[in-house]
Structures are given as structure tokens and as C-alpha cells.
Length: 43
Image 1 (tube, rainbow, N blue to C red):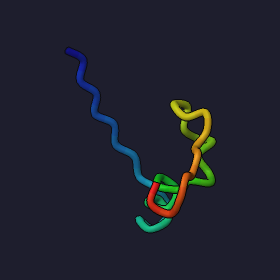
Image 2 (cartoon, rainbow, N blue to C red):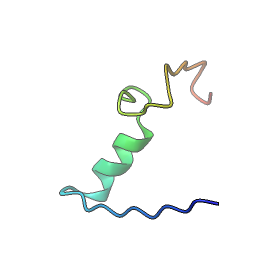
Image 3 (spheres, helix red, strand yellow):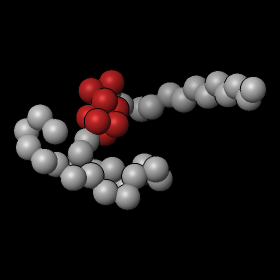
Image 4 (cartoon, helix red, strand yellow):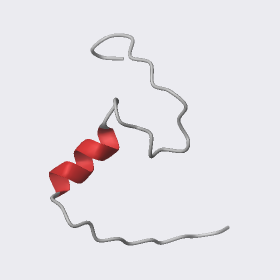
């Protein structure tokens, strides 16, 4: 089993990192997603 441990320091606040990672509009940096379809406020 392969194990990887990667650490990085971002020159911004944790809020900006969290908003980027959880954004449903700006997901172009994610190579595992082709699109996001929002069905309603909860899905």
C-alpha cells in the first residue's frame, strides 16, 4: 500500500482556503470533476 504525506503553506487565511475548496462555482482546479449540477439548495 502506498502512503503519501504532503504539506504546503498558503499565504492567505484559512477562510479563503476553505471557500476555495468548498466552492461549487469555481472547481476548475479539480481534475476529478467535469461538472457540478445543483438540484436545489440542499442537493
